[in-house]
Length: 336
Image (cartoon, rainbow, N blue to C red; front, side, top):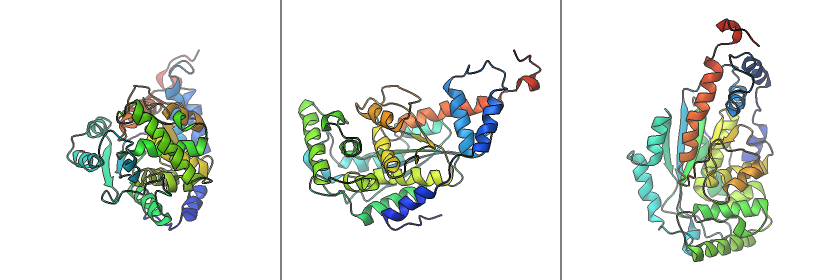
C-alpha cells in the first residue's frame, strides 16, 4: 500500500491509529514459555524477546523467516559547517558499495537471512543548513516519510532500518538536544572521527541549530533538524507498526529518528527493541530516554543498520527456542 498521507498531521494520525500488541497471543506465548523444558527464566532476556515478538505477530508460536533490512541515504546541508571528517561525496560512493554488495551490511544481512534494500533520497539536493532555519519543508519531509513507508515489504516478519549520510550524527545530536534538553555537548560525538576541535564545532552547530528552530516538538523536530534518510527511517518504522511487524532499532541516528515518533505519539515504539548500544557517546542516553535496553554492546559505530543486523540472529535464536522447544508434557520430562 502506498503512503496515504500528504501532511505531517495526517502521518501523525496514522501513527496514532496504528494497532497495539495482540494481548491474547502474548498471553498464550507467556503460558507456553512457562511450560518449556527449562527452569523458569533460564534463557533470560531471550524469553522476554520471544514473548514480545509473538505478541506483535499475533502468533504464540511464531517463526522468523522473512527479515527485511532497509538502508536509506541522504545528504545534509549542515556539512557546510565542517561537522564531518569526510566529504558529502562519500554518501553516494557508499550507496554504490551497498548496491554492489561490498559493504558490511551486505554481509551481515546475508548472515541473518535478511533481504536488503537500499534507497537514496535526492543525494544531489542536500537538506538546508539547519543553523539557518528548517532543514526541510513540510513537503520534503513528507516525501521522505512516504519513501520509508513504501519501502517496507508487507510480507516481512521483522524490520531493521539503517542510514548512510555524511553529517547525520550532527543531525541526530540536534534532534536529541531538542527533544531531551541538556547541553549540546551531552549529545555530540566524534562520528566519522572528528578531532577535539571538530567536536567543539559540532556542539556549536547543534546549539545554533536548536536555537534557530526553537519551540518545535515531535515530528516538527524531525523536519527542522533531521535529514531525508532520518525521516525515511521514521516512516518505515511507522509503517511496520501499522502492519504489526516488529522492529530492531540500529544506532544513534536511527534511535534519534525513532525518538521523534515517540515524542509525537507516546507508545509509538512499543513494537521496537534496541539492537545494540553503539560507541557513539550519546546513543546510550537516547536509549535510556526511550526505555530501551540494548540487546548487544559490541562497541560498533558504523551505522548502515549493522548493529541491528547482528541482533537479528539473537532474536531469531530467542524465537527458535520459544517455538521449537518441547514442553515438559511433550518431552515426557518431569516438571519440578
